[in-house]
Image (tube, rainbow, N blue to C red; front, side, top):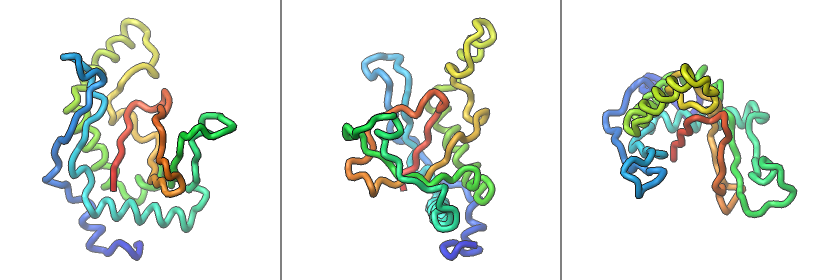
Length: 184
């Protein structure tokens, strides 16, 4: 076990929070009566013990597997020679180790995604996309499958201490159907 987590802490990892609520939702087109929801805020999305567990795992990875930590200026990620002020971040890559060492946290992350998915009404979009694939030969990359069908493409513990300006607007690319961010 980590020096930051006690044996009792490990037993607490399976507890499901009862105070999780829906915060703000942001629409793609707020002026439209039928705008697509692009963001759902989940209040108390992660328990304090899960936060501690993720931070402990990230620290352990940075110490013992430093190749899974990097400093990532966004301009280099996008292929620019000069930084036009895009900022960046310093991720510690947790996948697949988070699933091995903290499966309870991963399971709870799926519960949070499911809550956002249901709140936003994205299930109707998934059904529409499944029908398009079946009848119109739509490409899978253009669909919005149920989050459980996807798993995690990436899981990163991010910090921005090396980038005073933070991280500029960007797209995670076509392989990202859903993005879940937890603010610790």
